Image 1: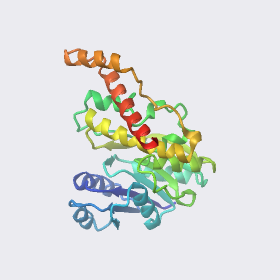
Image 2: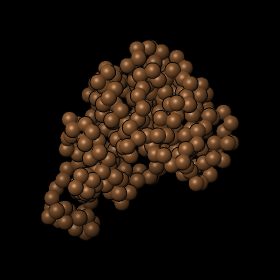
Image 3: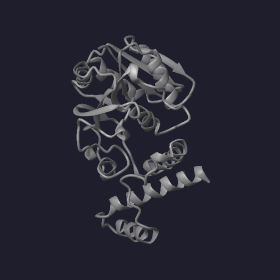
Image 4: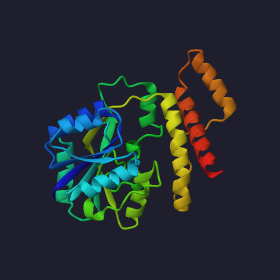
Length: 280
């Protein structure tokens, strides 16, 4: 089966350069980059990579960019990757091999994404992966049957014929919403940790808190459309304002054994602020 890599991007020229350099070494049959209204050097980066097909949008959003990438792609398999995920050796080949071995239309493959080893990985970044609201690969009990909620378009491949458009009204959770619709048609999502991508992005508690408020607003939209998908925010333990104040004071005093709990509280609070603000 032929395979197309689809990468939506906006204003991330330096990391996009790294992502394309890594993909070039794996010689995929096709790479489609959707530039969603970048104002930095992204157009020049794409132009330097003449082997890349490109689509230009005017800031239409993540869902619209992914839809445009699928429309432009010609492969029978579409491998979605984020612009800040650097493919390690063999990633593309492992996706291609999976679909050759599992030609059924409903078959999909989830790869693994973790922090790039060149980064200075902080305690907060470790928390995001292991208890925080980023990826939840450690919760996969059966690699041969992964819950649809884990269809992360940072590194996942699906048959083009099985895909449906992403919901352009959702700024976040567009991959979860699509996966839910596909699950109704029999989606079979498997997981290959060796199809590995390195996340070239640094995160801070402040950035995470801001993003969790955005996630809360998007979750309210998702639940308004599909009420049956409602569940408490995953992997965030709200500890209450009084306990949080004590925990923060201890951290300021030099005791950092409860810092993960502070991150839990901040993330849960930001999510609720966004969620309730969207609903009410």
